[in-house]
Image 1 (cartoon, rainbow, N blue to C red):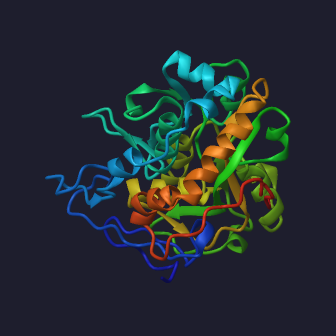
Image 2 (image 1 turned 180 degrees about the horizontal axis):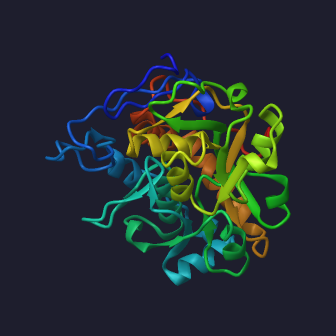
Image 3 (image 1 turned 45 degrees about the vertical axis):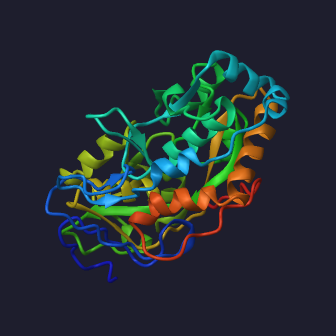
Length: 331
């Protein structure tokens, strides 16, 4: 698609590459204004949302369960099993990755699915109700891991060297990259080069700031407005206080799914691996969660989950999962 073309109703706009696979964004059309539902049990939802990812529940239920020896061999996993619940830090407001249905309380999406599969791996079948979804922000994730408020953070959590000094990262389980969001009626920005001299927003303490300073021509700190939350960045963009929003493309894509006044343009201009955040106080958790990830990579569960969530809004073949331990990023 031409990135300067204004999208139709509920269309996702972007130049060809999306996330790790170089695929083009697919249009998700609907007669209503609601974002497409991720997950469900099949059949029409009877409303404006599109029927996507209808096999989501079956994918989660079909995921692996660790044997008793594997769980007991990890003090971290055994503690979760004894507590009878997994405390996950993240969000439940992210389209595609982790979204809570207010009418049912059900949380679905790619990150949600990874969380649910991990809970099942530790706690056994039918463990989706044994997850505490605790809200974190970019600025609170490390602290909540360090003080034991959460067991894991699964929240499009970029692996960076400074963060690795504070917490451990299993994975990566996904790879994204910094990209650009603009208003749908703005055709003046199609690539990172077009951001020269523009006012830009990004989330504070995110990888977006460094990406801007390193890749936007003549970037000045005074041109960058930082906010604590995604919604604040969106508001600044929609209110024309800034010209563009730079952050992980996966998050920006979610914004575009939810709001057709926004679009994603150009290709990711950094490599940004996502990891599962873990406390350094439980070193054994790293091997355990990496073992879990490798298992769902090898048995095809990861690919099925990708197809039922992210694959519902992008064109192209399902990518291969990232290599465990490949944490190299470009910022």
